[in-house]
Length: 335
Image 1 (cartoon, helix red, strand yellow):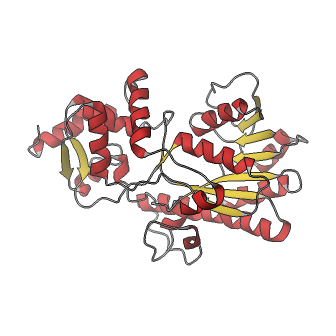
Image 2 (cartoon, rainbow, N blue to C red):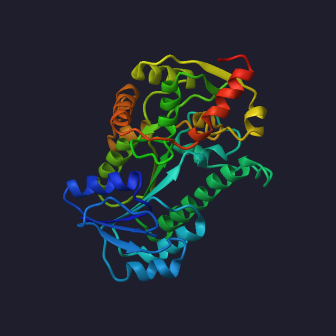
Image 3 (cartoon, one colour):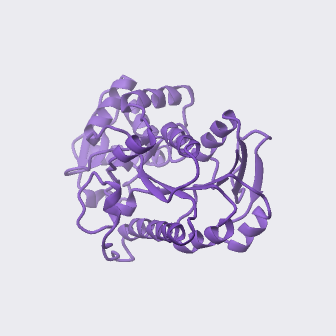
């Protein structure tokens, strides 16, 4: 199978490319080329800004692909451009969407099922707030999904949408899980916003890759959307307790008024999984219709801890301000 991957190669794109090659497929990647990849020479590289429809058309040219995996589609206009470019030329277009398509809906209670997609979208928050950027991300992903659904209804455009929650992987270039590990290992308290936290239901990066291989093996796209996520729902405290046990460290939590963390710009870096814009997805449809299975949380956290033990990052994102976090904790009576 000839497969085109649109998007970056730092995280999932890298793992996906290697998995496709290992399965005997021919792989082409298309991106801007701003970040050097670590892929083998057998991978064909095309360069274009996917937001530039003319450049995208020129880069792809008259090449033929059996499947296109789009990890970098974020809005309706880009969806329309790719539909117009690929209609009649491919058997399967697989799109990475997000659980935030549910978070911008009105009056929903997690865990979200696929049918929760339909319905009214909440009004946009103030443009000056961080919530606006998160709302816009979910709203524009919905615009992209709506274009694809329309293309299926009118021309049987062969797509599948996978809606993803937070992805935990060895190649997460934001080092979110590793940021918690690093703080546990330095022995200081972890700063968290005071008050209740949303439960966590993420997904392991390797499971995303396996889900894609499963979907492609099933045949042409059929205009369907699926949630993919781990089976377990855990509290943030429970997640951090598991990390502490795996790293043989002591968990010390320091709840801080969220206004103070915001004022000092310490959030979300000090605790990225405290973000209220985290989706909790029901994965049952992906299991019953596609036969996808998910790695247990305890197993993949053990793999991540082992990976970072062998491949430590000197200073994960946000950790350069760790001394400020510790000073704030000390001022609040933690040492």
